[in-house]
Image 1 (cartoon, rainbow, N blue to C red):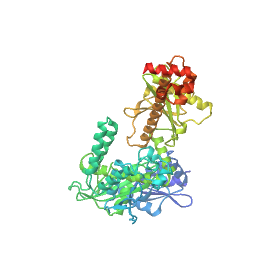
Image 2 (tube, rainbow, N blue to C red):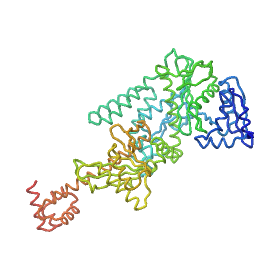
Image 3 (spheres, helix red, strand yellow):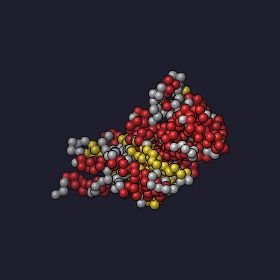
Image 4 (cartoon, helix red, strand yellow):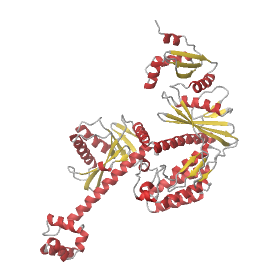
Length: 597
């Protein structure tokens, strides 16, 4: 005998409509629409779903109700109305964004620049009001790309900064801020940026372009080509924004544009209304996912909601992918031209609205911000766990002399300098990076195992396939392969290599994951080079003293401890040296330097 639920499914019609799921207490769980009610509802019960939430939902269903409608479009409209009216637990949660008609330059030390709905008479500067929400987000995005400003709410008065009251956060480490809270940036330098931003908000791009072009030329003249390239990219961003106006092709009229940006838990749908060649309205809608809904499902719901809310009656809508809204609405998915540019503009608005929300989360809840970045790194790098503990290795030697290696440690995306380690290469002769890498990786984790220290979640090898293979040999010897994730990063194209995979992974150049990996690599290089230089200096210093006849190791140590450097020993008088090591040795040292200068 079929169960009551199975009977309900078998008797559903093969027609378009809306279905509703209820639990044993009669509470609404979920509302959905379907082109074919029987097939769609049956699909929930004839398989195990990928997400735990959907499996839990199915177990709770005890009753199914449905409403038949003439077309799929009608089903879409009815679904939207029922979701808003009944607020089912497992349906997407719509969150309306607030309007921010002003851009504020806050009256404070190291001013923040942000959008706001309220004007507070505290000496702050306000620009606007802006009739288009798109304009506010686009301008703020431009400012963020051009000038790294702080987003924290700390009181960065001179006394607080000098007293060391604050510490730099993750924003500093990934390059979004220059660390004014620890005095890494002066108020004069910061104010210069604010003055440039003030001119941009007034519509004057000339001075900013001139400053950036002059800086790019100076950097190129000093052979700092990487820094010059970054400035060039900023110039391109500024010029592109200047060229892009809210006034579009006048032939484009009475068209609505929708785009979507999503992550694991949220989606953001941006809407632009085009009338007589101008953007007259922009709106961003937040949707909280409940059952891992696809972008297509979410955008479909959002389009219906926004058209209804703003009483839109346009006959054509622009979307990033095909959706069916019935015969009365033409859907355009542009591939190039003016309409493609409008769609890209909408996508940028959705993207930067999302970034703005994430910035706010970072300020009010730093742990949640860190958790988000760790989850994103896990997803981007295809890891089984979040990389809370990362270690990066780099080798340093010049023409095979004084070979050393460095290991830097990041925890929760930030440097843990007390855990940094450097290594003298003991078993390798000559400039052999592969063998050096194999040695230091083995020594590092052999010791950690012996001391029962917690192992990292991720190892990064600064180098390509060769260095990665060498490190893997050590992990194999220690039986750690598969227990610790390991990747190699090649410097030239920022390629990420995985064990056993010949095809490298390329991350988005602007992604936070890549920024943290680059920071790790740069720290390892800096730490290794510093140690290498110290070792070379010490070696050169010792070799100079060792060449003096009759001067032993103990005498050298006494002299270095007293005079601090070979240069000071050379400049010291025979009397000064004799006071330290005696007359006989002082005479030998003095005569040696006189004849060898």
